Image (cartoon, rainbow, N blue to C red; front, side, top):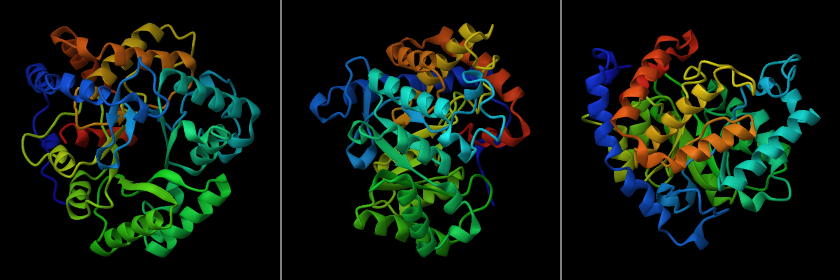
Length: 367
């Protein structure tokens, strides 16, 4: 696949980062405060301390930080939790300690004014649908059961995609989802024209059937994603795509130009580059806890400086992390040269220790 992304150019210098970041930060006041000025009666689970942004053409007002589905380091809070399987084991959704943690985490997010949960795997859909029982109207729910979606070859037809959606909704005891965002190619390779048409037809049908209020896709393929936004603006209402504290707008042919022109909402995944942003292990007693809290806030504040991004969706495993992210929202206007310089050093450290399975994130430095 041809790729003219600037990530193939020379590494970003401190001067380049400061210049690019400063230009982005200049627009932050407009991007957040204008959204916050909307009538609070239109905002689900409104909290005066939270900021809200319009989720593109959906018209939904969404908290500018939301709850991502992942819980990769939850075993630091509940020791031994992953001993019978990985962090995405379906066995977790019957574990009482896990169920309580996810219920309590959703409650804590609600308390801070967060109003969207993004679930992108079968276990995540099951966990969060269970956590929302009896209070489904208090949070928007984004849905993707990626095991039965276009990331996998056998699930790329309209018929199979709708079959997977029906099976997932039934298993999770859901009548509908607020957003169905089909998980597509992660990185490398394009979906064919036929596959793209099948994906769009599935989204269109699900919306007409009342199973999804809004629709979109998740992809790690910048070029294909831009094409989909431009070619199918009606169905491409929201996209879910990588955005880290080292992501910058391409000088030309940027994805964000298409996003703004077509009025598309964006949820940013991997805001902490997996967990590579951090030095500690996210445990409550980690010696690096304070430094990692600062790293997390700097990353969130930087991401929020791009008004095209609706919200980053970090995976959170304890109350303190939720409170720390909420604190970042309060601090968002204070990211000056000193903060940008600190963030640049952090990003260099993060990029240097990306594991092999996350090297692809470097292709999302310029978007």
